[in-house]
Image (tube, rainbow over all chains, first blue to last red; front, top):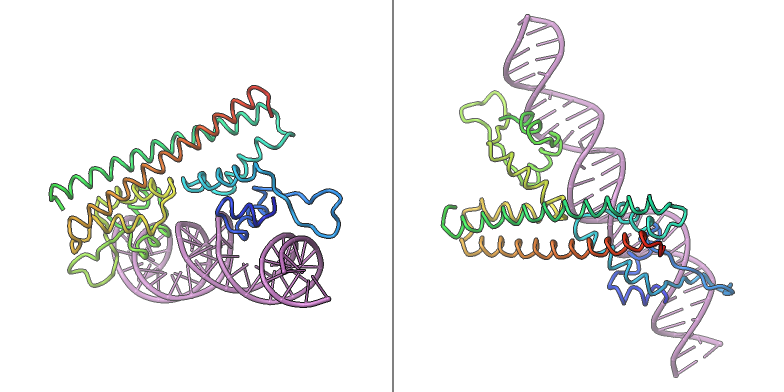
Length: 120
Length: 120
DNA sequence: GTAAACTATTGAGTATACTCTATAGTTGTC
DNA sequence: GACAACTATAGAGTATACTCAATAGTTTAC
């Protein structure tokens, strides 16, 4: 699919998609044999990747972090051990973030109770 | 305590603390009666506030969002109902983020398994 | 065959969140 | 009373993640 389709299917603007491509998070390919233009086509998988980027961004990961992660499972020069290490490390980070969110939630609940009971 | 102490107790740089103060996230007060300087003193509570800011930031909340939240429980012009609404809305957001993190974790676990089984 | 709609590239502009520098004044210790 | 260590303010600089504008070329529908 072309960039416009990818944009519409993901809800991410063409500008942002190009930005992601410039940062190496996604990659489109020029169709073989076509020489009149360099329109890039994106595979179906790109949709999933964009969705993953959105989710990861939403919970506080930077594009650099996300790129490293995406690279680790597309880069074939990386040994399986290293890939596993990168992903496992990220899972731990995610778990830490979940813990932190639960802490934030608990704090908010305490404040909510205080307001309800009229302490502030 | 003065800004240096607050910085040391929280691990947040003086620059950043001042930035937070300029954004209205924390507030120091000049001691009454003191006219020779305008050194600001910060209450003990400020430490907790800074820690909360760090946690909230880590999981993807912006300083504006955090400020709104902090305001809602210090601003006395706000009705308890409105305060409750602000906090309850944030708790929902936190729950959503937890769900998203669990989704991200699941995806990472799938990829990890794929690497382990040699699919990529 | 032309006009609308699309694509690519380059580079500038914006918002957020710092981070640093320069300057000037204040406090505490010897 | 000198000097290190601190404080405040203002403003410049940086990194990240967009966001937009300008330009130029391409494709598609009529």
